[in-house]
Length: 578
View 1 (cartoon, one colour):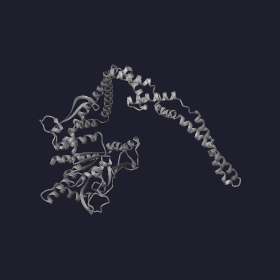
View 2 (cartoon, helix red, strand yellow):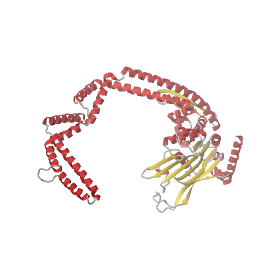
View 3 (cartoon, one colour):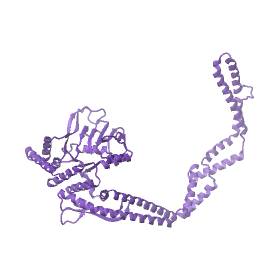
View 4 (cartoon, helix red, strand yellow):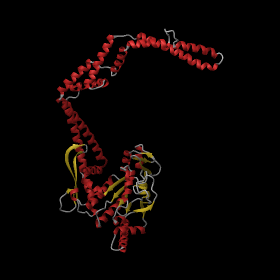
């Protein structure tokens, strides 16, 4: 049950704390007063879609917090999902921050929560039903989802089995199709791949870095004379000069001798002496190394020709296949694998056809089981829905769930249609083609009442579900909402005084213009000192009479008040019958 809602800088709401009650909670107010903003905030905190317009102009951050009292089953579910637990109510928080883009963060019991986690929790906490959803009643896919949802866990489990069987059958068919297509092109592909294989095998491509290594060797062989001469020059400079000049090692040796003499008088020079000695050692080693390198460098015209020929071969292959050498080595392996598959080392067409037949058989059996479950559930839904519609001034209504066979899909092999006849003697017709707006509203309410018995959630939210009805029908809807409130918490946005009269808690939503300083960076006028805000007030009994009178209208205010008194008295009578 949703017990408390805290909102800051959300749409037209600057600040709001709302405490909801058990039973039927009603929000009333003029059209455009901001009632739907409350529902938008509930949707947002449960992980619904958000956009920049939800952040109040002049503000950079919007906040919605919701507190829920939940049964032990939900605490157990949270533990199974390894989600954060807390003593007391379950707390959800959504923060929307404006920047270059809208940044959204959600929290569950003060710990970050992901959207999938919130979606799983939402299904157990709140169900929001808008009057606009009546348009969706005509969708065959939506009708199938409702039927399957009414069937509960057994039907859901079987549908998962169908989805898995459909996936297996689809993959088997794809493999068979691919193999048949490959067979059609087999000869051309084999000839081409065999030619590629021959060329690549003859090239003996083993090292993906061979071309880089050959390039380095080519540079060394092509500049062997320069390398020899420069090695000798470096050796003379470092270690032994033939020109009579002191080599680097000689100079460092002299410096070392001087520092040895100096150290006898000042030990502080030890560190400098160590550095010079190390430098001398390094220079001597470098001199010997460069001398050895120079001696090893030899001109080898034959090897140079071999390297250049190999480089031309590899570069020619790379240009031909439009690949780098590493990619060419990988392509060689792909060619070998493709040849193996085309040569029949994979599954044969006959084996793949047998696999397709088997998976199709499994899919057909799974779909048949699902269809039978749906037929059983459909009969139960028909009976229960008609019983829910009768109190809504539709006592002669006919309703049938039609299942027609179709080609199997991941959702089964059934096309679902809700057939409806509100009047005796009229044939059953698709719901969307037959029902009026008021009948759609009642149908949707009855449907939700059916679902609440098989898959109950703590809070049911209805946004103007009673629009387009009046009189006896409005009274029937009011009583249905009230009865739902005995089993669940119900939050309802309504313009119907009959619904509002039965509320366990009644809130009036309205807009006010207040003085306000414009926040820096806001979107309104620069010198604005007034802002529009949404206010939600819980109503006392006297205030409820006034609000009901406003909703009812009438030739005079006194007539409206008398009508409001009659509604409240009638509501008390209904409560006493419970």
